[in-house]
Length: 417
Image 1 (cartoon, one colour):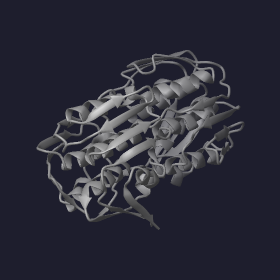
Image 2: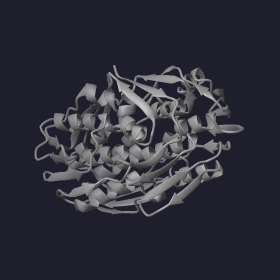
Image 3: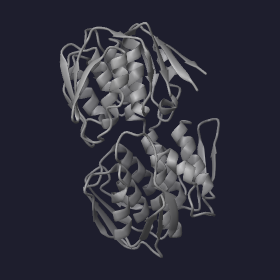
Image 4: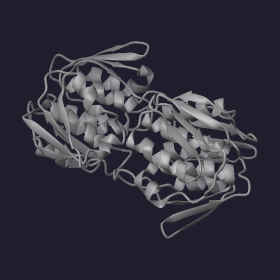
């Protein structure tokens, strides 16, 4: 198993380039199942989650190839299986996104209940309610879900919660459905907009992506296309937070400033200078951070995926901060690891009260989930002595070559096999 060894580092300095968004490219790969034609996806990072999604789509009969120049080719001319591989689906929750495309394309799918990071309950009932409203017959049993529909039909669907996954799955299913589908209380994340843009290039008729009401008019068929996914706003936010925590000066390139507005606003509140350009953001911190209060919310609120990285920054801030997690009920598992490094954190229900300290200490810790791993890297950069982070396969799910990118900014970080 690999580990990361991190020594206390000076202020991060320099330029970092942001990769394509994990949470955008995964549904786009799934959406490629909607056409017999080849889809070409450019600038795709070989993340562990991307590799799993490639295996899932391959297992259904599609031909998928990730070239050395980061170009992913997906050709789903024939769907040879409606039974998704159990072990692959259990590895990653996003693999459940094949359900909508499969129902729309071949009218049948059998899939296991999804896995992923253990950050709390992420029920799939909203996905299933949407498919059922569109005419799918759904059977649950023995850890599997089976669904079939001779032809999906457009319907008005209200989501009880603006679920990103359910919004994406229903959009994909609706593209080839008969009639018009309207999704109300839809998720508004940039990744939803990117998926809609990709599908529109394929010939889908979608209006309202990025708002809480999305209208999809079904078409007979979709064609292949070429697409570049949006940059990863969470990776960008992670490096922005690392720059602030280490009192550094970092230019984050290949980012859409609009997508990270909640992060930028909190950094400014923390006393950090933030300079926004067309496709980059500069983060400069010269003083110890000021404490802030955070409440995670669906987009355009503060992202739950940035909760643990900003907590690491607050551990070395001046004063007391309160972070309230409203999206996932079990997303504080990293707190016990931060405490091993000397962080002063108390949990009260869904809120964490952080008393900032000037110094953290290196320790042996483990990444409990993807974003928790990123948070531990940030804390390790600020800690005296050496930190050893284990179970970093979680980090590799969502960050490509993170240690190399950190080293270019001056971090003392090494991966040990």
